[in-house]
View 1 (cartoon, helix red, strand yellow):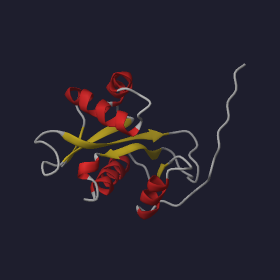
View 2 (cartoon, one colour):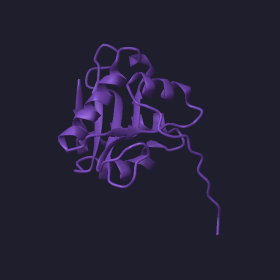
View 3 (spheres, one colour):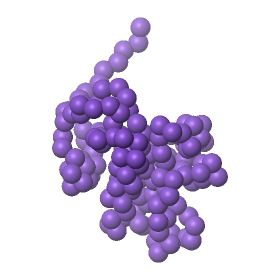
View 4 (tube, one colour):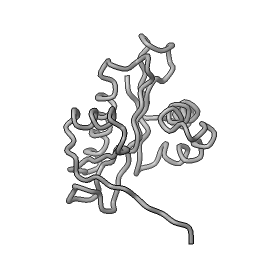
Amino acid sequence: MIREAQPSDLAAAARLASRLWPEHAPADLEPEFSELIGSDEAAVLLLFDDECRGEGDACGFAQCQLRRDYVEGTSSSPVGYLEGIYVDEACRHRGHARELLRACEAWAKERGCTEFASDCELDNAASLAFHLHAGFEEANRLICFAKRL
């Protein structure tokens, strides 16, 4: 089952997000996810599968939002954007990531989007394979730079 996160799901959403982005502790992610949950411009979707997790425990999440700035490979605005997706190892290979993606795409369509986009790190072969298998087309490869002033 997939449902949109509620304020009472904040800790579970932050816990799952910290597994995707391990450089951030759940407590560090809670303020951002608190803003995202309930936003008209974003959605945090939670996945529940009682067969591979305890009853009522979320075992995956997806974060999507509307992007109104330029998005590589698209020509419309707003664009639905998959910011992050994660499924616990015990629940993988059951089609759950695809289900989460479809739920994000439906969320974006409900908000008038005709395009949906995402990104992944250059060295993340599993994410690249997931995106290509899900019907995404590679739009660009990018290396970002920064320096202190």
